[in-house]
Amino acid sequence: MIELSRTVESLAPSGIRDFFDLVMSMDDVISLGVGEPDFATPWHIREAAIKSIEDGYTNYTSNKGMPELRKAICTHLDKVHQLNYDYEEEILITTGVSEGMDLAMRALINPGDEVIIPTPCYVSYYPTAKMAGARVKLLNTEPDQFKLNPEKLADAISPASKIVVLNYPSNPTGTTYDKSLLEQLAELIIKHDLIVISDEIYSHLTYDLQHIPLPTLPELRERTIFFNGFSKSCAMTGLRIAYATGPEKIIGAMTKIHQYTMLCAPTTSQFAAIEATNHGADAIASMKKEYKRRRNLVHEKLNRLGLDCPLPDGAFYAFPSIKKTGLDPTTFCKKLLTQQQVAAVPGTAFGPGGEERIRISYATDFQQLREALKRIELFLQSL
Ligand SMILES: Cc1ncc(COP(=O)(O)O)c(C=O)c1O
Image 1 (tube, rainbow, N blue to C red):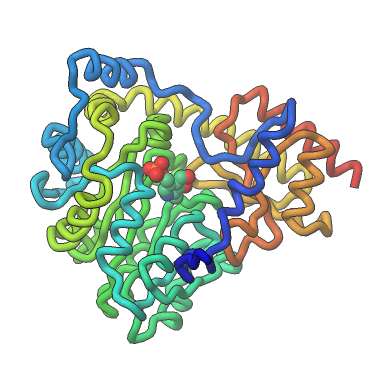
Image 2: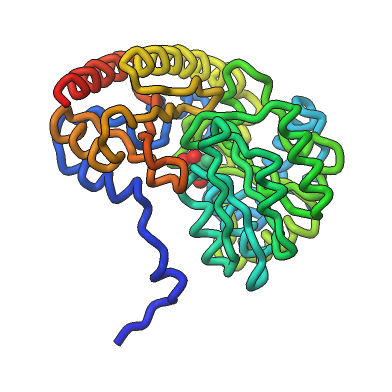
């Protein structure tokens, strides 16, 4: 008889993938489901990847990632955010933020350590923390406009608390944090000697406010692992490339796990990432402009339909309330899919706070999005 790891057995499969197996089996579906750009990777970035293969760069790189890429990212962070990281010891190139998240949890957690995760949140935080042996405390941010409330964080912190996970702009809510809130959170983080895993993968997609990287706050650099990557900003999800920066001690421990489990991030993707870092600004800006146009459309229309939807500050998700329909999110999404062939994700997939909501990704062509919103209107009229 095969006995699995009890931790793995206790984890529920991702609520998103589950749902999308159903979507894949149907025709003519407009998917507002998956969190990935509808754009292809900008051509000059693809060309850099292709050229690297033509030139024969198909071997392993340094475990840490190519020095050229590490240098390019550190130079970029310094130039744009005055964030100074040593490219030799304080950055690791990973196979997506997903891998980096897992490495950070495993590098830091001892049995019984507590990880605080504000919810609704990206689906991998809870499982990666649990698989690393952590106790997890989920903090529902729904009553606080999906922002982590400093008073509630203070109440949640216990002597076992070690890590707080932050993600802004957020998947699935689109919420971001302004300077004043970040400063209030920073005060608590310093006071209680916590480490922050700060997933800022949507930082480039912040529409109205200025994005403030967490390690730019006083005394936060030495206790923050800063995650960013190319999947969302440069439409490079399939290339699986990202980075983590942070204190040498933590990055060193993450690198140790990475060298045994991953060896290095894909070489071809590292070449693409060098091009994206050095020359991607215009492409990023033009995709952002289009996402903002879609955000405005989705936000305006959903509210007009009576689905109360906060204005997303960033990322490419809207998280409207479906409370007035009287349906739970899974029933709502299944009916919407079967009756109008529109796929959205039940808010429950993202943890406490999503019980009355659905997630709509507007990383979808503008006309398709219009059509999907029309179908949602028809669906609501049919209820
Ligand atoms: C908040 C957040 N973090 C990380 C990821 C995964 O990023 P990557 O493709 O770099 O692994 C996603 C993907 O949806 C995300 O929404």
